[in-house]
Length: 550
Image (cartoon, rainbow, N blue to C red; front, side, top):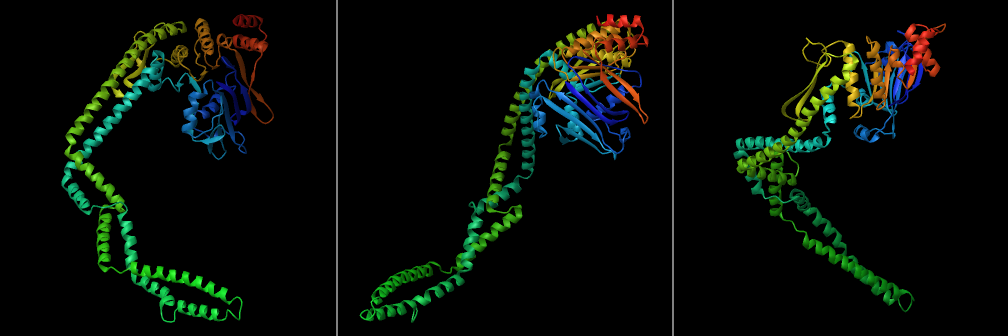
């Protein structure tokens, strides 16, 4: 439900803040007071086109903000998740800002969004209905949701969606496989040639990387051998380091009688000599291990050339990718060879899945057919007291191909006069008749399914007397289930409201501004007396106003 509405710097509205209540909220005011301006501003929240001309003060932006209370926040969780928005429990704030330069911005809970996102959420929260416009009931998909909700098809529809999805997946798989088999058979010789070429290579995983590493080693063998020779020569050559150190050790031992530490130093040189001889032995082992092998190098280069050629040919970058390609080609050949059997199996599975979906769809269709008949009769009964005694109503359920919602299309058809053919909503009768019809529809639907807050914009125009009273009673009854905001000129309707707001204009020395305020009980009596007689002092009108409340 709408908790509050804020509008600033919009047409004749300088600044207004309204807090609505549950149930039936009444808005009244003289013609031209600005009620339609309020609805125009509210339309911005529903994604209406913004026009900078409505901005009164060009030095400031125009702002429309609506705070909603969500009775069932969980039903909106997917929307917030899919749009990466932060939810705020039971509360959500929608805001539209219009700058003097014509730029428009939209927000949900202070997060910037595009207009489609704003409208997608807003249309689930509020439905503005005037004589010539309804944002939901003219939509065939919404008409279908009405019938399904009244028929209690939620469980069956969940079953159907699973079955239909399975059928669609199998059908897609069959179609893709059929196309692949067809293309494969046309290219079978070429695929076989490619596969044979890859099979002959008998590639190993990461073979190209391993060969490149070995090739680089063999190609640099001369430099390696030269460096090994340079490393071992000082230790094993003529007058090498080992011989020199042995000479030093012997000399130190001859000095042992003269120098106390000479023997210890000689021992230290002996230890160093053991380490140096071990190092020299290890280097010589490398020299034996690393040998130039021109034939192996040529073999590697030849193998790599073939691998590189295949990589270029198949537009891949590694031996592993070539192995994957070989596996795919092998699978293609197998599919070509067994194509008929595979397609037959897939077709059988798809037919079985379709049959399962059709069985559920028929059950849904039967429920829709029965509900459509009952709903049409209930609608006639609800509309008759509203002055539509000649109303004919048919909820057409047309069965056709399977689709995401079953196998039916729903269309609401109406005739308001005896000599008039049945026509879709919006193509028949006057605006007033359609408005009363919509009121009757929503009063029925609200008993079975949750509707957003509804705003009726003077849908009672052209109605009077007993019909006006019945419309008021119906709105009051509807307000017991959902929030209803009604702009009305009828005292019979205004008296039924739980809350009553008056829109009025005020002049100051600079401009005329539209304002709104909530009326207390005595003010409501005076307002309805004014609506009845044009005067707040007419005692008969005051008495009549009080009788309407009673």
